[in-house]
Image (cartoon, rainbow, N blue to C red; front, side):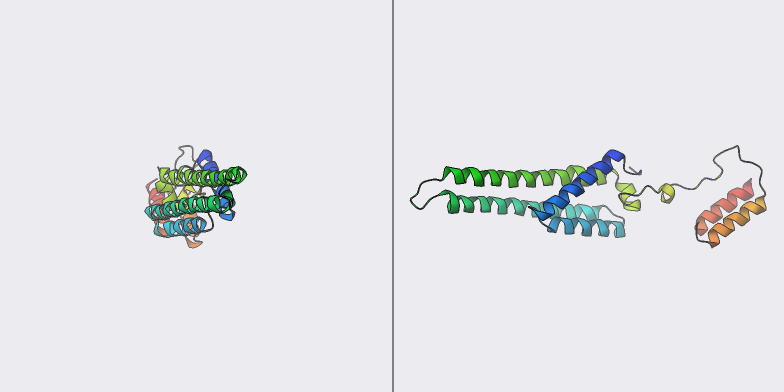
Length: 190
């Protein structure tokens, strides 16, 4: 869809970015943040959201590695801290490390869910707009053509004055040559 993100979509992205900043410090690490920033910058440069999809696959692979590392850490912690030298199982250790393990797995899953639902899905729903304008842009002048003569209630004007105004705007770089030519044609047709 070729329209700016709605408030609820921006809210989802902000939630994801807050969650990303917290998890960067703790569990998931800095690598997904670097991949997201790199993917977004390349997507803007190429004006193609498929670039960001490739980085999404890299992030998903990284998250799978994080899952494996958490499980390995949990098993190691179990054998190191939950089994005493005499072979007895330390119930307190199992509860502590089991809780930490579950918390880490749940947090990683929550991260995976938020990146998918609050970031990538939102971007894909506004694919055309984001490819042309970026995430937080509301400037529709890039995608909609200027239409000065929208209203029929315009006061009378001098064709020469209007042409001079548009020439000045073009010379100042406020409108493109193409926009100037379109408006010149419309003014001369009136």
